[in-house]
Length: 209
Image 1: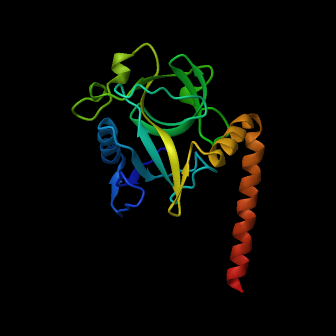
Image 2: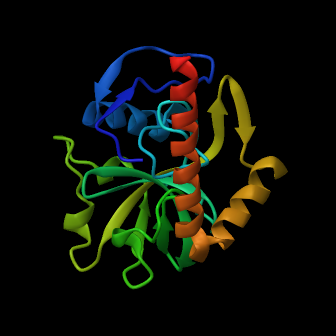
């Protein structure tokens, strides 16, 4: 997920507002809520985390992961992080010390900015990591290596008012299988694309009748 516009983030899965904000303003609010130790829920955009998240339909709940909570992500976790001013919601595929390799569930390969050849260094969310003008200071602090800011870890998905806890077997088993099938992912994604096109054609013909 890397969006330009988002709905106003909420602290409750029951709240929903139609307000659409520019990405910079939206994630500024998200940062403040996470820094305050609050869990944040917001609508997912983009298809990089398909099939777990469906763009415009599902919401994700993020718990804070800051210099105060001192929680480190584990392999398989979905994390919200910022790199070069862009906010990304992707899965941790590998961990090497304080560096991670990430990929979107709906992508056919590793992220270029966090690949096995060039893992991404993560630092926890803190008030000192953001300049007053809103620009991120991480790259200035760590000029010798690519660095991202870890904002939080996803703990649930909301679809149609129903919440899927990421600690439940209903999530953990399929998620683990999808991660293990990473080498075969291009073939599976092609099947998903073909199935979606067939479904679209079927519904189009049905509506014509």
